[in-house]
Image (cartoon, rainbow, N blue to C red):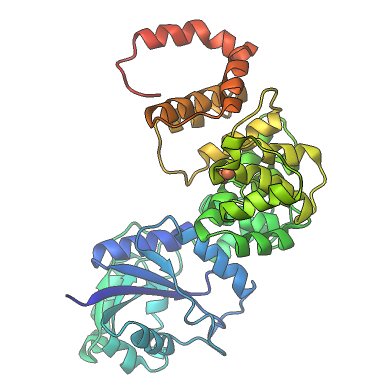
Length: 419
Ligand SMILES: [Fe+2]
Ligand SMILES: [Fe+2]
């Protein structure tokens, strides 16, 4: 078996942004790496770190969890004192004895390479992959980088292996992102889940949107898998935007979305115990399925563990799996946000529901539930009677009735593709 090719990106990741992920992806592709490790510093050599290391770590986890071959690595974060690259490499060598290492840096950092500690060691142990930067200073564009490397042939003579990464020039930086966040705006180049994490907690000079956010985040992070935690933040991000669109209470939508899956990672027996101990009486089908029962157990935990008293929030959590006749706009927002959040894997009706949701909650919900109905029928699974009844009810609503003639017409022209 060949040796693993591992890329390493150090930095404070304060916060991680789309530029980091893009650079890791281009480096992985261009140097044919098996994986790229994003290695946050505990204490950085020349930078004042602004944010708690566990917050930086969680933002990295959720930003990476959907990315193939890009992983966060805690090795420098858990080390006492300042994080120097040669020490990180030494620790990684121990952890991955059969790997070749590729150190990924921006052109601006490359300009100062001669000042790095234990440079001889680093040059011996790693190939350097250098990314051009658009506007981080004189001499960091692609051409200038080439000229720079030509001029510094002595690095090659010292045994350095340096390759440039062929990628579009970028000028995103965490400094820029922090400045935008401090103005109360949402930077375009921040992954939605990271933007949501920052907004809930009020990081980087923002006002915290959820007063209990710190306690909720700690608990959710402890009780959910990274993927489920990331999904939760993506649902909250989507619910907030949908709520704003449809004049629904934004706080309630965001709070319900944050807690909608708070019981999802419990074993089924635990969910059943919660129901049993608290005289909750779901029907037999719901009681036998974690995919259904987590909404009832979650609604209970939202009240008992997370301190939510608002009946609207609790009800939106309660009915987010099966739906309910008479769902309110808030219930619909949370149900739909769960189905269309940006990290959702594609399914047949996804793009149609995404397109409809900002326009009409009732129409989007009907298309979404009919899609679920078709999916479970196809797999010979039972559809929950509550969902059947909700579909019937949705079809009677004015917005869906208005759509009927058009729907009939388009169906007659349908070439058989799913919605
Ligand atoms: Fe759920
Ligand atoms: Fe969910």
